[in-house]
Length: 54
Image 1 (spheres, rainbow, N blue to C red):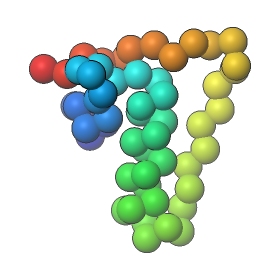
Image 2: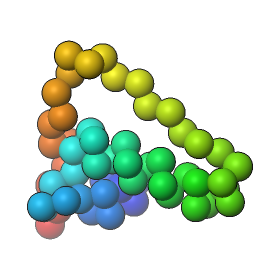
Image 3: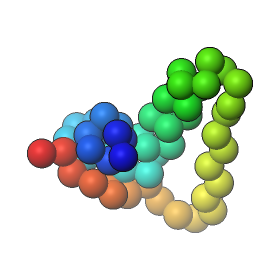
């Protein structure tokens, strides 16, 4: 929810790639490095916006 609310935004939008990066860093921070999330998407799926920053 943090990421979708704008914390993962770059240039006013949250994309699949920016959300992936944000989640990766945030989970490591919250768990003291004990957890590392993994996101898997097909290579044929382009990066696209999933939310816009207010």
